[in-house]
Length: 409
Image: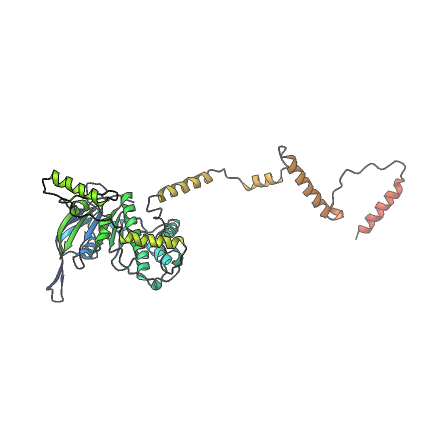
């Protein structure tokens, strides 16, 4: 989707923040809150980047400055090498705000139709994407209900769909899992990973640590508007003073022998600290229960478990459109035929190579037509035979003369 004139080089960051500061002032222009304080970071192409921090740490303010919704007090921001106020970059961005601001009187389909028209999407492309997105977020069955009747989780789902309608190069998600059940949360994570594999750039802002940890390549941690730490998940989370060994279930004697070996090899300096049974995550348990309930076809009035990632988000829309173009060109290559040629073909006799069965059917139809015609209109089956010589022709001539006189006025 990259437009001409925009930077697409891997060496240039998609988002570049330099010494960004935002101070909110009161009516008397006195400093009221320093939301962002001297913040610098880069987001590279095809990277899933996390903005992590508690509420009030400056995450949403930073995102609004990147989108051009707020002006920084100082510092600068670049998006695709352009300033945020440049309207041309908007078509390449998808944004899910922290709160879903939707038109309450529209239904889900009308909402996506509206946003699709804002991006000047072709009607066929727009309808195909709407169908795929509604299926993906599990709202196909509720697509004609007004948005005001949706739960908060359902509104987040349709908000996520509108953020993806333009197949953005940069997707910014501000607390995307707020209000979602574990099914929707897992689906959002899977979608982010799918977009990352396709080469999209994703910025994920959240205070839910598990959401960020599962999907991001790199993150920064904010507190009080300042950057407190930065790095990859492995780099920030790996504990370098411990080693974990996972094996099949061991009895107490085997564990004791392993502990003796560790002590002997380390001169009594090291030992087994703890032996525990591994536990599955609560999310895994919950999703397993839901999947079993769905297999039993249990009914629910909420959002359905979403389908597969939309085809255009997987990069399959281009190939589908190309196939349709080829088929249309093949149809156009058929030689045009004039009306005269079609009429001539229709009135021509049955081709000699027609099968015997075809000839028999056609002849039977013609005989049926002759039978239905009035007697005066029927054609003689054979030419009239010659009049015998012993017939008195004067009688016939007289009859013909009388018939001719009767027809005269």
